[in-house]
Image (cartoon, rainbow, N blue to C red; front, side, top):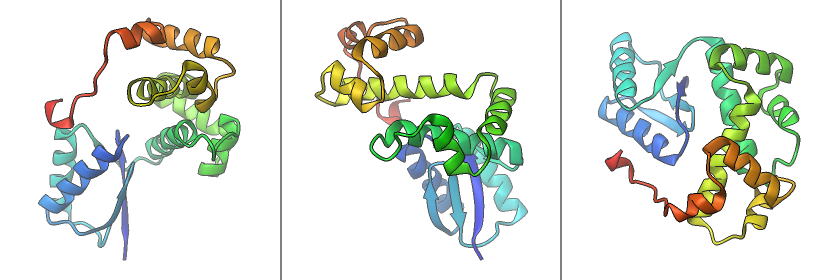
Length: 186
């Protein structure tokens, strides 16, 4: 019987690899690991959970067992999905979250604000700006193309929001010659 564990702070494929490594090192058989979720082949023992929790903390993750925290984490994943799957998710953010979570947006939004100390909309904007940064660094697109890819109404709107979040214009950001560091250097 599969046992699902929800994990906080997983945001990319490197996080998935890190959790898979932890599970393997601890001898915990798993069927699947995705962002925010690990499906174990069998229910872990109390000792395994203790060791797993400790290993997760060392890598900046946290196992979730509180249903409210789990819902907020699922909402974060829905926001990331909304930001990163442009063609698939041109719905309004609220509709996308309701579709993915099966919970009314106002319920999710209220809980998100209570537990995170910021609105889900501000989290969404921060994720969009992170996506813009990635596209600026890794893709060969114009600002207008990036605005279209990320759902901004114009390059000017993207630039205003980017500056409001980062304190820099997209051009100034690129002039800093940003480079992503490998995980082993973090």
